[in-house]
Length: 414
Ligand SMILES: *[C@@H]1O[C@H](CO)[C@@H](O)[C@H](O)[C@H]1NC(C)=O
Ligand SMILES: *[C@@H]1O[C@H](CO)[C@@H](O)[C@H](O)[C@H]1NC(C)=O
Ligand SMILES: *[C@@H]1O[C@H](CO)[C@@H](O)[C@H](O)[C@H]1NC(C)=O
Image 1 (cartoon, rainbow, N blue to C red):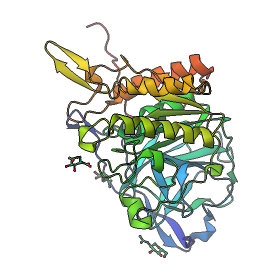
Image 2: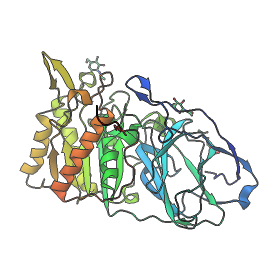
Image 3: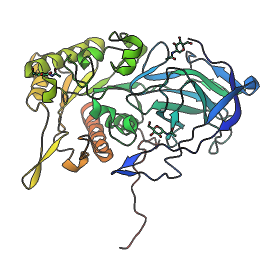
Image 4: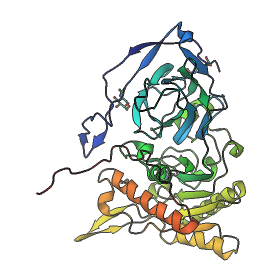
């Protein structure tokens, strides 16, 4: 591919257009803090004098989640991070970027900002650092794709002339999540950036994370809701199987090179909700066989990883004068876990029972998916589980984690 080296001046075409986030059927009112959505396009000009440009293959840039060799993003919340000095960061997005894709980005541990990205455009994402002691002090820039169904292609990174591009410290532990819409944050305010896998890992503050989840997917290798293959196949691929993959690679995704990624210490799986849906015609024995094979495959890829299997208490129905959970595969999932333990070599497979974490009003009434509060509850319980089970202590970092969930009351005395 050709990198865009012709660049950029400081002239901004700032737009006042604002992306829409829905809250209880209402458009969330923009606040100064959480919804600025700047669309800052830099126009090409002879400003090589003002910028240093780096290719995406530059070794200081650390890639998170799955990216292909064209630096196109796949799956849920893929991103990149690097250190820098100076007060400006601009990113050129390639022609495989889906126009309007939402990304989250931030400097250091400050609040995430969200913006829609334009295909084949350079966005000025950082234009000042008002909280830095000086612009020569190093900080970090991180970006994550906040739509599960769309992606970006990174074509170049630009820093103010004379700034330094620096590597970032990699956390020693890595957690991988494998799932469907429940894990990709479908119907949550900021999608992947509101999902319980992101909240769990980012909340710990001291782990690397990747989320191999896509809405509608089964574990069984069947076409489920338009996903051509199940996770038992797709998890091993770079691409997620969907329309973007099909446009570029048809039904033949590129196998994921697991060496490109730090080995996972813990793998958390939340799968089976789509297999349990009658529409997809998955039988009990197909489900058990596919799930068992996927666990065996994960163990072959990462022999030292602990594998955490979640039960599926993520749905509720009214029953008389109350509500009851309608779990997916309530017998089969514990049975799969036990079958590993029975074979005497399954001390790496664990059940994380989600019974009772959510109540019916943690599920959106029209979406059948966790609300933002539901995602936060699952993340909170999973963090406690990781601590008790594996001794994973959170870091007291204070970095911003939860976007758009700041509900408070400053009025006393009523
Ligand atoms: C951003 O994308 C969303 C989803 O496609 C759209 O609703 C919104 O209008 C876009 N906002 C801008 C500023 O382009
Ligand atoms: C993107 O650009 C490359 C290189 O110029 C070209 O081969 C490819 O067809 C373009 N793809 C799209 C989707 O525009
Ligand atoms: C499920 O089976 C029914 C009856 O055999 C069939 O009509 C339907 O197309 C199947 N659905 C899928 C998604 O394979």
